[in-house]
Structure formats: C-alpha cells, structure tokens
Image (tube, rainbow, N blue to C red; front, side, top):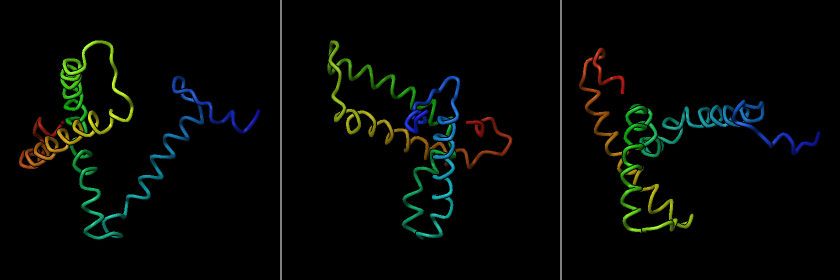
Length: 126
C-alpha cells in the first residue's frame, strides 16, 4: 500500500495507526511536560497549574463539565432558537472557554476541599 494509507485510522476496532497516534502523542506530551516546572521555574508552574488542578480532580471535572454543557445547550437554544447552529469561529470563545473556566474554578475549590479530607474518604474518589 501507499504511505498515505497509514493515515486512514479506525477507532473501533482500534487500528495500529490510531493507537500509535493517540498513545504516542500522549507519551510525547508527558515527556515534554514532565520537567516543566524545574526547567521553566515559576512561569512553568503557573502554566501547568490548570492541568494539575483538572488532573487531580479528573472524575469531578468530567461529571461537572457534562452537567455544565447540558445546561449551556439549553441556554444557547433559548438564545438561538430553531435549527440555527453557531459558526465554528464562535464555538470556542463563546461555548468552550466559558465551560472550561467554570469547570476550572469549581475543580480548584473541590481540590482544596479534597485535600482536607482523610485518605479513606469517599470524596477522594472524585
């Protein structure tokens, strides 16, 4: 086959190209970010703080952002009735960024709460 055929991946069942692309990208990102605070100092720690906050409260972030997105869709349906869909240039600044901001601050507060609970606490699950 051609080299371009390698780019045609299938998620289910996972093709070798799909696994290499997703897992390889994750491993490369982990290697790049592993020593970031020590390499970049205080600036690196500030850049990585949102990732650390969400990473420490991953399940809470997932459940919360699903709830926020569902409510956000209701609000958008009220603002833009009918089958009108937002153009792609409007989705990121008006939809995605506010959801991430709301989720980040809630995860930060939840992480602070979680740090005060005992290691055996049910709240540590989230």
